[in-house]
Image (cartoon, rainbow, N blue to C red):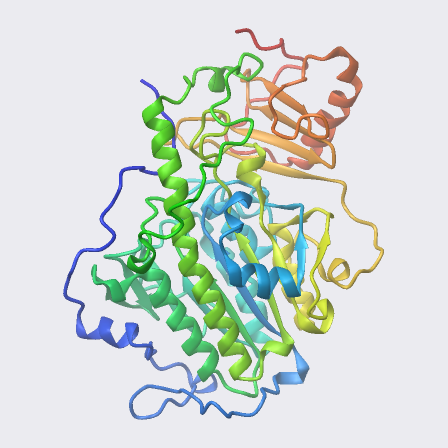
Length: 508
């Protein structure tokens, strides 16, 4: 039986009319009332629970001049899906730095997010997948005692997580340390979902006003506009979009009707005889599957229009409160998605579509409201140390490197290769466990056991159509990359079986 891990492609109704409870109405309306905080964290809300400042409030003067920090993290967004987001293009990329080589070091939701929170690789957090025993919220354990949230909170920041936390966070009563405002999905969907509001679960129905991206955006705006003016803020805004099943907001259900299909050269790859056996076993996509992929790409793009709206609203709130001029804003995705490339629909693979992602940083005192690009490798393991450096606090245990020197245009020594690691989960068959090393020119992948290896010359073959691991002229390069790979991938993923010294080339 064929198995292509990926989203469900069946068309879902945009919304079903449903009754939204009184608590939900309050949240959707924009109040997003919070449970009381300890005295030192209280925002002193008025009688109605609303803390909205007047439109003429004076500019914020945050603690010791520390910058505000906003992370906008989408879910499963690819580079190809950036073209339909006018605010992100004009107000972030147009006034900031686009890192053309932004990558994740494990192409899956939960491990990527724990890396973002800690600045540590999967082999240090122990979170390799989305499910226990080596993945998910349950596997994060005491790691949540030292994250960017706890570091910044101790430094006087008002902190908020609004949206998706970690896969497996479903009870809602637990609020991790470091978060002053906590409005996290316990069921992560576009409609008919639930949010933990500092440990109190609020359920949402299927009414158009309950569309999760918009609800979360209102909560983010409320957090910004009601935050104490004498404290810097840290906002982690994480909507579901464009993760499948991608359901657009009703107002965008018919948008982008002329969007052409995205068929890169490796789409539904015709000849996979050079690939490892696990990929050779994947048959070509059928015409029906191709049509589903095309429809899904359209729906994903439609969901991102709502994200773009909320980026605009967040920027507006920062401007209104006088914070925008000193806010470090990062736009990124937790991983990409194959969407038909190499016949695949999933993301737990070492290919470019799954690991190479859109990364934009705007910080007006540094980027000067000018668009620029940087081709250095910028990884999700770098985010936590970047935020810590901007705030002037330590990043204990972080294995990444602050991106601030690159943002400032400094000429500093920088990495020319990095590790990508992933462990296959028993309930999610597909690509075997792998360790890979990506350089400025090559991608080398070594699979556990006898599952094979891959080598791509990305300068000659950017779509990874020709595995050259068996090319004798590249034997020395492959040996070096394999040695680098095994050095970087330490310790190895759970269950790793050391491959033989050399492996035969694939057979058709």
